Amino acid sequence: MSLTRIHNFAISLDGFATGEPQSAEAPFGHAGQRLHEWMFATRFWDPKGSVGVDNAFAERHSHGFGAEIMGAHKYGPPGWHDDPEWEGWWGANPPFHTPTFVLTHHPRPSLEMEGGTTFHFLDASPTEALAIAQKAAHGQDVRIGGGPSLVRSFLAAGLVDHMHLVQVPIVLGRGVRLWDGLEGLENAYDIETVASPTGVTHLTFTRRDVG
Image (cartoon, rainbow, N blue to C red):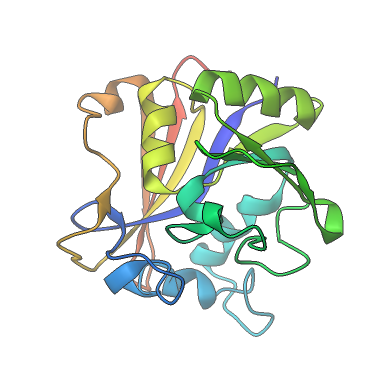
């Protein structure tokens, strides 16, 4: 059965997954890269990085996926849809290597990149987008890539089977929060926590009616 999964999604102690204001120069606003420093230090990201618990979680990001869904704010900075030359943050060979569906109110023609990534731009609900992505995944899992508004919408719709969150010990105070409107979400999941010596906490949510 194809599952819908989230991996390596980092939030602050106060629940923000990005800061503000976002721009081409500051994709995560005032948060900078502080939410992701734990991952940059792993072997998953850097061949000279660590191989401890953080790496064990981080590397799960890349296994078993046949498609990805991301939000408009992950694909580009505010206003990217007005730039016909914008092709994402990642250069000619994005790291997804699958059909990747960008949810946007400004659809454009599909964009084929190197390495097996093709961006498809959809104006669709989470349920509609997931059905399209599952068909493209050919039985493999679908990754929900973010940002926080997109993840929140898929959680609210009850579409996420497995979620790996990383709570980073910083307080951002402002930005885009993950948890707003999701009261009682924990009742649908089995939740496990693993503390890392680096100070982050890995939380895994597995939906109780899956497998």
